[in-house]
Each structure stands twice: as C-alpha cells, then as structure tokens.
Length: 192
Image (cartoon, rainbow, N blue to C red; front, side, top):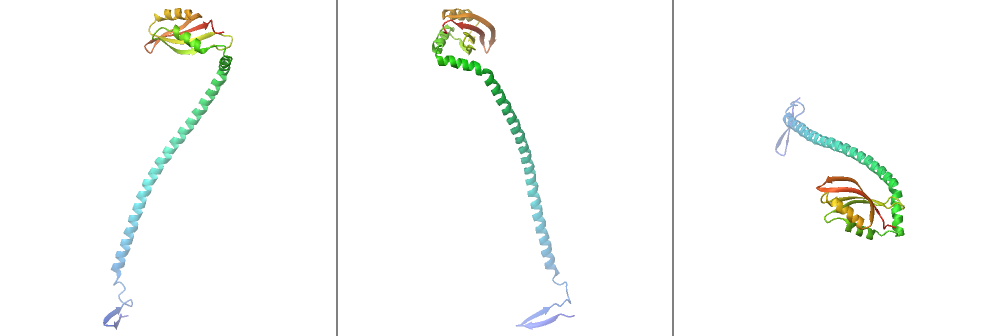
C-alpha cells in the first residue's frame, strides 16, 4: 500500500492511501482542543450568568413574599378600620342627626353662641373641644378650655355667667402642654 504520485501542471501530488494515516493529525487535534476550550468557556459564562440570575431571582422572590405579607396585613388593617368606622357611625348617628335637625330648624344661632363664648374667654385662652348637646331637649354643652394659669378659671366662670351661661361645673383640671386645661359643662340659657 503505497501512496500514488501524480504529476499535474508541474505539481507533484502525493495522495495518501492509508499508508501514512496519522500524518495530518496535528491540525485536527488543535481544532478539537480549541473547540473544547470554546465550549468550556461558553459553559462557564452561562453558569456564572445563571448563578447571578438565580440569586437575583431568589432575592426578588423573598421581596415579593414580604410585599404579599404587607399587603395582607394592610388589607386586614383596612378591614378592621372599616369595621371601627362603621361602629362609630352607628354610635354617633343619632346625636349627629339630632344636631343636624337643630341646625336645619335654625332655632339656634351658632354665630351668636360662639360670639358670646369668645367674649367669655379670658385673653390668651382658647377653646380646645366643644361637645354640643346630645339631644334636642338638652341644653348642656361640654367644653375643654386652655388657660394661661389657674387664676383665670375664676374669671372664665364669671364671664360665662355674664354671657347668660348657667349651671357651670368644672369636671377636670390638669396641666398639659404648658397650659392649664379645664374640662367643664355649662348650659346656655338663651339657646331656645
């Protein structure tokens, strides 16, 4: 089994007919090793990219679980607040309706009432809260007033009497926010 030699156009061609089978092995080995290295490099890059994506996916899944928990807690809190609001509406519907009825009948002038109340307050004092009568037959108001000091309480009581308020009762006294606060009830003699 010898290689055949051919001469064509001045070229001496030698055709290997398996007499020397491993003569061209080096380029094929180089191409095979190069291809394996390229495949390994691509695999390493894909693994690293997928690991980074996998950690990012885990973080997003954890933050999504936290958001779902927060959403559930907020929805339960919203439902609880809605129930409390409905309870308060039911509880105060009757007094509010009565006060609105009083206002609709215009049998009571709030402008005159607040003007008289403002004149009764000592200088530097102010009204913190005012609860109007809870029914049409009641004339008793409940108020919380902030005074500069305790001595102004006597002046406030006297001024209320001068403005035709009666049955003045001091319910509570305390010192809060650098002010002397008084909770009291009184009746307006000129309400009806």
